[in-house]
Every structure is written in C-alpha cells, then in structure tokens.
Length: 134
Length: 147
Image (cartoon, rainbow over all chains, first blue to last red):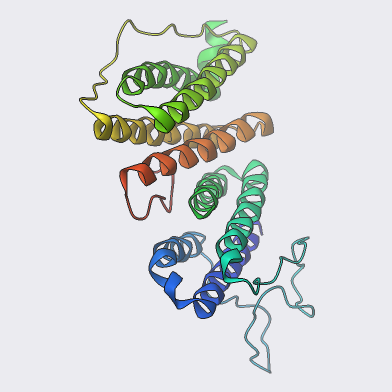
C-alpha cells in the first residue's frame, strides 16, 4: 500500500519531467539523468511500471490518480500545473520533488522495515533533486 | 544496563552513528582548511549541523542507558587541495548516510525512524551540493544510503 502510493508519486514525477522536456527540449540533457533516477525508483518499488488497477475496458492511460479508480487514492493535494513561463519550469520540478520527498519520508516512518529503507532512500534522492534544481 | 543496551539493536546503530559523526566532524575540520569563500561557509554550516546531530545522538544513547563513545584523537582524513576537500566531503556524507539508513531499518520506533530518515535526507542533500561543486553529473544518487 505505502509502496503503491510511492510508485504513484514516482509515475507523477516521471510524467512531470516528460512534460517539462516537451515544453523546453533544451532541458533534456540536464533533466535526463534525474528522470533516469526516478525510473530506477519506480523499478525499486516492485510494482508494475504501469499501474495494474482493476481491468479497465476502456484501456484509458492513467495520467495520475483517476477519479473513478477503485483503489483508495492517497490524500493528495493536486500538484500545480506546468508553468507557462519557461524560467519557472525548474522551480516547478523542484517543488514537485520536495513534495514527493516529504511524502516518501512520512511513509518511511510508518512502513515496515524493508519498505521503510527504500522509501527513506527515495525521500533523500528527491530532496537532493530539489536542491540541485533550485 | 549493558545487557539492556546490547539487546537493543537501535543502541548499536546509534553508537555507530555517533562514532561516525565524530569522524565526520574531524573530517570537516581537515577539509575546511582547504576551502575558501562560499565553499568554506557551506562547510562550516555543515559542520554545525553535524555537531547538533552528534549532541542529539549523545542524548539518545544516554536516554537508553548506553555510554556514548568519545571521539578518537585523530581519524584518517586528508585533503591536499580544494578538489580533495570536496571529494572528502562527499565521502563523509555518503558514508554517514549508510548508517542513517541502517537506523531506519533497525527500529520500529517512529521517533528514531524520523531521525534516520531526516539524517539520510540531509546527508544526501549535502553530498549532492558537494558533488555539484565538483562538477559531477548527475550530482545526485538514485539510492542514497546504499553506497
């Protein structure tokens, strides 16, 4: 459960990095290594890269916590949208990283030991991402 | 009291952390001497954070009836120049991060968990900042604490 929620946060970050690079392709070189670390985070959580979810006849891609999802969504405040001003893209990513770090850290305090060490490591990685993006 | 302490795995990890913080503080003294200007200010702030962490660990060990280890007279830490100093800072922070991760994995006490998580976060942020100064790309690690 905590690992699934962490995986959802990682998927959201991957999507945010993709969105940022789509908006400003010049950021690809700088953001690529950080995005790769998130892909590693997602893999480490031992959950499918694409949320399995209940069989969805529409096959609609999940771009985040879907409203009609049968699994209880984490109590998340909707993250801010990608800013229009290119100068604000990195601060936007930094803010998303900070939020993910805080959420991972809180989960690491509550999780079983095996999951906790993974979540703690992810919290630390996201915090460092936020620092280098700021 | 020793029986109680020895039976508590958290005491072993907290003791290892305190010994490491002693070594890290010594290391920051060595590397600070090779830095100037902004980097020196950052090193001094880091050392200050480590002193606070050391004092906190001393308190946590005493709370558990365990004897906090004293610092050694000297540690193996050398830095011939500024780049050496930055690399040493990276090693000190990443090495300490491993122990904070150990703390997370060795206790179910939420307070100690929080200390472990926050310690791992802080060491990873400082390590990334030192790696950035070294020009490392990326300056971050996917899995801090697993080095």
